[in-house]
Image 1 (cartoon, rainbow, N blue to C red):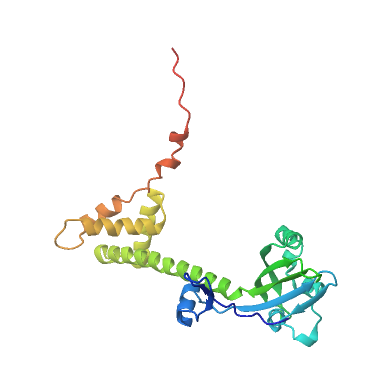
Image 2: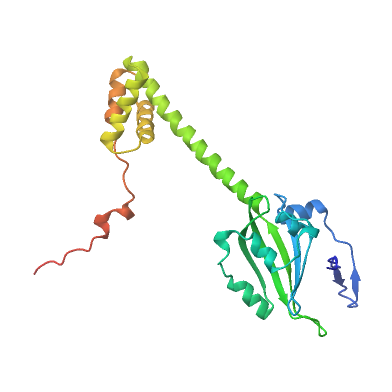
Length: 258
């Protein structure tokens, strides 16, 4: 496949109308910032001559599938053998329309490389009707987006862990106050807090948060006392529903009998 040529920038002279070539007025750093370059992805190219059925792949496409160029012949059979079993029956209409009308398309699916690892790939292409009697072709790219998927999952997992730590910290803080004020064991303090949460019908974290909020708002000047702790535990209450979900608001009004 011939290498892609860098397009030349042309500027039209307003006075004479002549086209003059000028160097780009931006640096590589400016371009990287504008395009939002971040995670480095493996990108390969492919080409299919529709009349002959001949395929060409760049080395990157072979690498994604766990092959070397001399180990397999590029083509449909090779692609089908590595497609994820759950994605084999998916039909992307956009690709069919692109071949028929020459429009660009993009679709995503999973592959399983020769080492058994699942990869997420995005196939981008555009059908070309050919010029000067040339055979119609399908040209495009294959992008391995697996690193992006892994980063998204890692961020989600980190968020879940962080929220769990925050929840546990609030619970332990409330239990510590109960232990200190009432002089009971950690297990007994946990039962006291659990009973308050069960009575209000709310999760333990919310009960602990309400207890600590009430204690901070208490006007006692001598620190947390038995009375202040009792008030805080007694003040644990259910969390109100948003009014939009109140079934009473969605109930149809009855007609008045006249």
